[in-house]
Length: 449
Image (cartoon, rainbow, N blue to C red; front, side, top):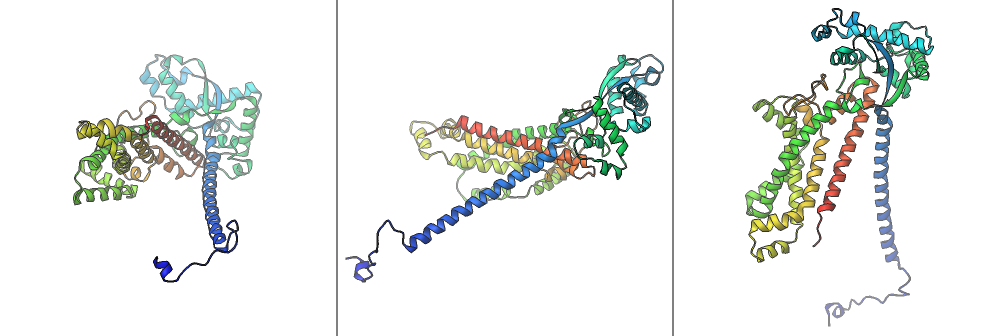
């Protein structure tokens, strides 16, 4: 006789059919239905928020991959560019950009006459449709090709930022009446030049290769230096954080004795993974710049700071991957005479490789998008002489993609906001590629047991 029957607490027999739900079952099913509905609503809100974010970024940033250019036939007048006629590069280099501006104005006037475009604007006002970057581009071409002086050369010169914004819908006739940088008459002339084929809008390859530009030339700003700087930093992070993180994880998981010291180390590693990234920036500023004396704005400092920030993530992911390998694999290897080192490196590590690679790539992707620590160590260098003088090494001044986005959003011209959104798209593409690589590597090295 059980305690239940001896106490006399015998449950009453259930009335009715088993196919009919009683009140308790109905309440339980209703509770489950409400929970499923709440989960579905949460997922829907998350998806809609992501779609809204991506839509906003794409809507404001895709136009940065298109740029308006002015196609002109420019006569490289020897009387202005090489007065001595000796083709001496030192003498030609003495001609500043102010000496090239009249050549561009004359080319614009001639192009308007050939196309039959008339305007009440003077030559100077018509020339303002062209970017202030154009004389510098023309000068760089002449210095690279001094033998072309005296010839008429075809150029695709950048249109001014307001003109480019007019064809992208960012500038209107109404806004031009209140804008000191452009007038409605200039917009009307730009429309006529567009119809005549002098102004064209095409894919902006320079957005990926050109350096940053000043506040008055947003149409010339590009990501060239920032991409190189980010690539240098990611190379340093990969070379330092992956071997150090994997080695530390193998030791802590497989070889280290289990005592209070290893427990303290493990707790600190977990805490470091949760430390705000700006703290690592302060650490890098104090140690690598103030104490060691490394240069500011150098990719080597940014790479070292991001390495410190990425190490805890890689260690945690690697240890989790090692723990996921069944103990029977280790026991089997040891049972057939393998040493512990052989068992780990020949059997455990290959099986844990998918998780290790996934954690490493996710850590690198996280480091690629960090901004706060890079701002503290001064990764905001304005490198203007590019591609003539790009950052050629880890100790040369450079910028980074997320820092470039931050800098552009701080500028007043709306064209820089467009550029910032375009840079975010480029950054997201890199992050998506890295995550896809993590998935593919995981599938490639995954093994079943």
